Length: 331
Ligand code: AFP
Image (cartoon, rainbow, N blue to C red; front, side, top):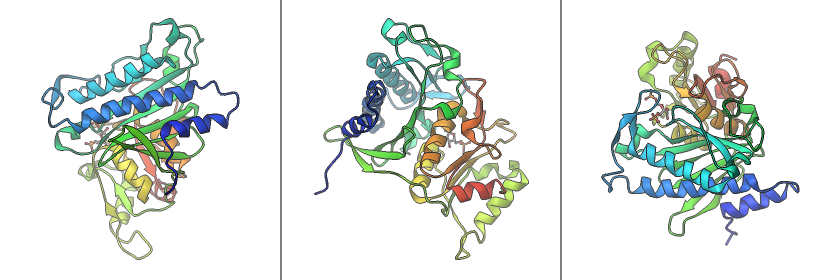
């Protein structure tokens, strides 16, 4: 039998590669794993528990209906960060403004986390995969003081780590610290994540394209012609690509990461800057895509080099297999 490696053991081994590491980032990753287990447990019983399933009744800062599970997940991660003591502040898709933690121990912490607690939450009521996406940065403000806005508005290239948890047919946590991408599947019976997808690499080319084709008439001619190519004789055998669109970015991205493919959500008249959030969705997934050998752009430039100016900034996203993204961009 091959040896099982837990997420915790894997993190400890990686930390040993850096003799001067303080262990803070390792502890933070373990905090994320703990929150992920709590949320996974809630997601698994969403259909059973009336107070969890359904809309919260409020709207988030983008005017979208908040699902109860959105709020539950947001709080689970915030609690994990506050209890863990490695994070001085957070920004989340569900909160209008960033939160600077008040305690002295938090003010002494070196990291901030930006996250989407439940991506694809409009899919909760129909039992479709959803996920948490996170991004970790070192703070820019002075240690010992409260976190500031500048800590949150850093370019994606400054990410120290990023990852996602997909609550799908199983729960999988995928992350990078800038040295490859690894995936860990949760064994729900014992509540432990095990290394299941070591050194993930996205195929250079794939045959899946993921786009909301309901927006086709709003796409620019370049993108329309790329989609026509996908639908006709795109691969070497002269067969069209297959369209796969879940409407849950984290699930669409994960599938394409494993099988090879491209996910596109461009700017459209109804979302002139794009629909997806730079800080909570695009930057973390772009970091993972690049670490796995793929590409992520807004259709013109590298996602990771976009300078954020607002917390809830949106951008277009072309992400996935390198050759497919290049072709979609007309390169
Ligand atoms: P929610 O988290 O609000 O459900 O948004 C999901 C999402 O940001 C992303 O996960 C999807 O890919 C995208 O929106 C779907 O958008 P369309 O419904 O416009 O295709």
